[in-house]
Length: 340
View 1: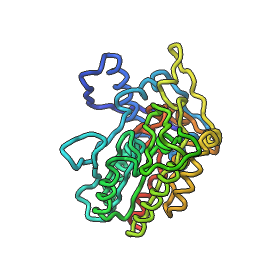
View 2 (view 1 turned 180 degrees about the vertical axis):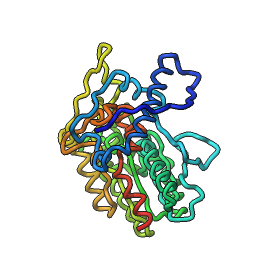
View 3 (view 1 turned 45 degrees about the horizontal axis):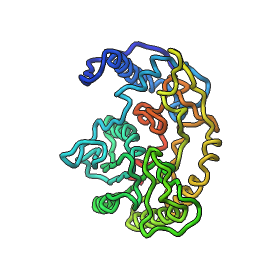
View 4 (view 1 turned 90 degrees about the horizontal axis):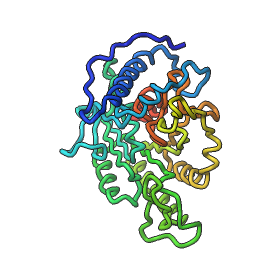
């Protein structure tokens, strides 16, 4: 069982825009992060791998849920350098920039950005143990999938090839960008479009023929990377939804809806697109990554962790930095493959 012990939070500066209540919430979040990170070593390897495995050791609280809404639970590129004067989450970042070993290149949307803390954690572990770690080039463009429909995709692929990676990793929220609002019929467009992110429209300009064409192009790209000597990993779709957002977990000043969601029910709901995405991944020769391996225990996907009792998402579909850093062990094989 996870023992509750005191952990000093140390000095922490808050953005000037924070109100007094937000400063209190952020201060709790910082203390919580320090406590949780310090106590992860008390968990068994199996417990670290899955936040939904029973028994429940901590119940959700208003304070813990409120902390998950704070500024500190947004994307975190701490420890990465950026390869341009512009500093935001969309530029190419690099981890272990001075490394002389193999290269890993990662491309995606915000569903790649959210994973950055795990790779930084693995880098820190390797450094502390005086073990090698690959140089990682990392680009996540919010609202932009790593597909030919993206205006910058050709340049991104050219950059990846230029660094001669041993491993390539793609992560995107497929079901946002492949929705075929134009229906099952109709010819494919000469240049198929992807749906806009965040479900802000019906995507009636994309049909199923366009979806299949985009995935055919993706398969060809992956096969090209493999032919150049890279091992390729591609993430599939993991359970998400409004139930996951901490902003939907409070009610009347207390803890509200925190019931788990069903992995099978989620996959059934989105099967039309998940099935063809996964078929494309498998046909391309890539290795498939499934975040639900760490998120769900059998069919049960808890929205607050069983051991810490805190939300694992920052909104409806992005893991927060704590969840990514401490639980997403499914990503470790990407680093391991660089030295295979």
